[in-house]
Length: 406
Image (cartoon, rainbow, N blue to C red; front, side):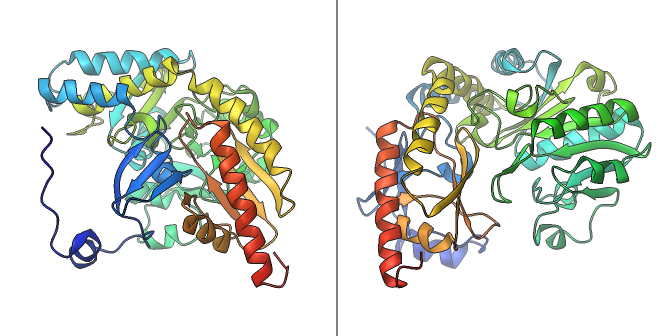
């Protein structure tokens, strides 16, 4: 029999407002449970979740295969550190490397995307003996010291002051701007191949090919921050090696978000060239590679395979793009797979709020005209039809309120 914890006096909204440090402007939803691409609130309302809690619910909320793996592991061993060997950790590492591009042969497990990016930069510095790292306008790599110093998006770098030295900025998609700052002092070039928070911006395949040539010529480690694009979100396991990226594979790929289906976990996939420079005690983590997280990683990857989610992403993305042609107010569809940005002629904020009132959860971005969709990889065409119908209704209502200007 399930035992529910006692309810908080005054309700969760009152308690969180009183006791939790304010960090995000929250949606007026008290999340109680989830199933697939549906989120159920404590008041009985059901929401179509096209945001997945920051792109985390890749396999859908509470996928039964992932839940079963977590429960089984919790009943066996909750945790032990990397000071011992572990069957569940070995399986997760082998599984993750098996789906990675062939040149990436080692994995380092940590707890989050920002940790993965911090460790990726450290590995590049250790491998090259250099200090500087080039990142890009619009890039966001996390909120810890080195990662936020590498984030040239809006106010984030300012929030991270005093910044870690050694960070250089280039213009995303502009190879000439990279050449101006790249030299023998640069350890790494790190980028999000699709800049999600910046409004779902990407670059032409030729840009990635030119980056690869530049890194090879100067001995620079190339790092892809695939915290959002990885684990199947683009319809491929990774953006690295894909046609959209010119087939280019970096020396390091960082992962998190959907990797554990909601269990906190991050990872770096690393080439032998970089891994050969990493010695014992160069890197470390207490909770990284913990048993619960490792069970979730393996089960997540298995669920994506077993349910043919990569193929589903491609099919449903095509259906979404086709249906969006019916909405002239959507001036451009950005992104790839299930990392999609809808660009509007005006501000996307009122549309986001209108959809929320109609029980559809989407995301905004630093581009005020772009609405983001990051749904579970199991989303179906029927839910796309529901979303498009609700979007039409919201736009029509806003248009009538604004004299037809939307």
